[in-house]
Image 1 (cartoon, one colour):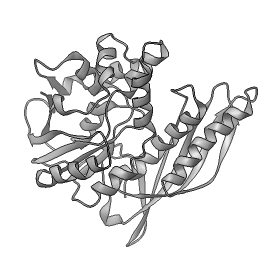
Image 2: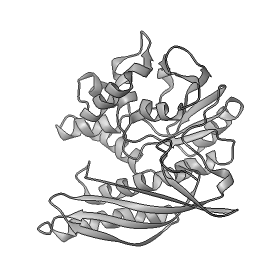
Image 3: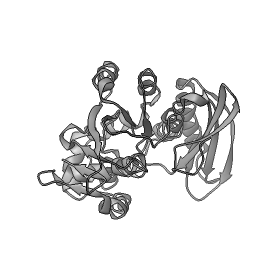
Image 4: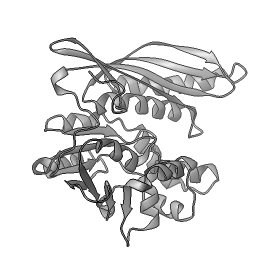
Length: 305
């Protein structure tokens, strides 16, 4: 039912009239020094695609690359962190596979279930929708600053808190309302995933730069050019589709291109339910916001104000 057509977050295969399975896979090298926290982040990131489709996670398999010469206790901590997040998701860790490699890499293959009539796709935004983002931007920039010893402990604590928070809780709120499109913000950055949501929509997204939730110190790091190569690749690919209006700070502009790890859900919903969803999300202490709206097509696909 969902495959490669629109670079969606997961594949969906229908089994019966009332049941479909959702499958996804993600793994990567560490972005933090603590192996336990890395395991939590990698698992939360892999599980996220299930909720981005509107599904419920059921089983997960570990994917491990680990050097044989490294202390096995490091691997134990990575797997413990991942296992705890799978349990928090309400899913079952059913095994996995490991190989010897020169570097550590970890992630999950996750299977979920969904009613085939209630699938969220990453396309389908409609004129009149508002856009809700359920986590702050800036984790990529904070991790980049941390690698060169420039990130504060507070900024990294905020980044880790965001990356280890499951999108399960936001998804449980969102699924009570009509949803036209949904995705999670990861490697293509906010603007890259928004670009995907607008495929075939013949519409423009107006982004309110002042309403975008973000890690405060990430703006300073961006203005100091502590940014990632991946963000610049995102910019190079997208800038022909994006208009950044005068007055938008450079730091915010960089946040919008910044690749995220275990980022939040980006949801396109009818305007009349936007504020109600936001109130429900804020009850969960999630740093979220209504970050834009979908309007009739203008010269550019995305306009940042």
